[in-house]
Image: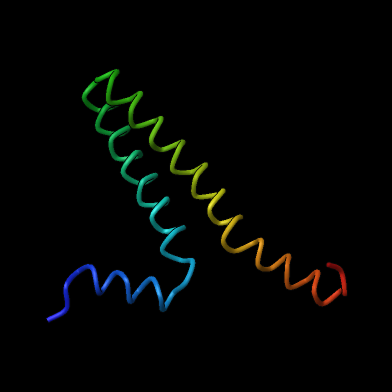
Length: 84
């Protein structure tokens, strides 16, 4: 039987780069749920925390995607064009 750590590590190795972006999306999703719970329960603290986590997850997700995926694409394009 495989441990969850081995399964996660194997998934990370097989799908290089997708776990990083997915993790930030998961954090943003959790923030959205907390935001909705706070809005439904009229809890200002939950609204602020949920909104901050949601915004942070979206920003970090975009940054990670740009850093892990887009930089590789740009590097390959520059290599094809003969730039260093």
